[in-house]
Length: 140
Image 1 (cartoon, rainbow, N blue to C red):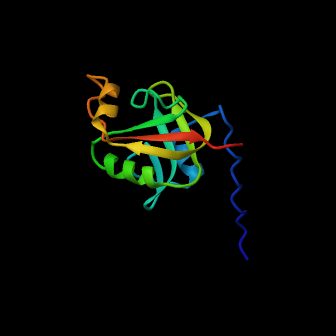
Image 2 (cartoon, rainbow, N blue to C red):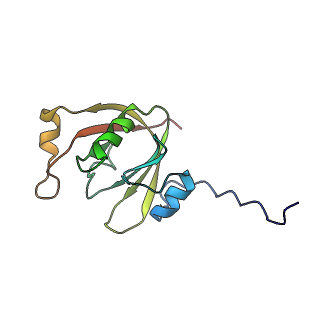
């Protein structure tokens, strides 16, 4: 018989409440691996963390995920676009700030159309977008 107490179950995240990134990833059970815009376990996307500096329409309706081209970002963008079911979305409004829980969203569509992507480029910071993934808030 073990003397160890069972680990307490973390309280559910609250819409509008801010959390540290490591807290979000641990709460969702994600792997500690990049890219950090998607929280993932294995090859499954289980959450989304979007900084407004790189995803200026993350707080919009629909929520837009601007998937970059660096490293594995494009590959994970495809996985995100193929994800079905509700995903928790967190938005960081200031660089280095907390991640605010926006609620559950689901993927509605995605595009790689340059005519749709081009107007969203914001040089010198955002110069390459592989695809856009659109999310809508899940019905309560």
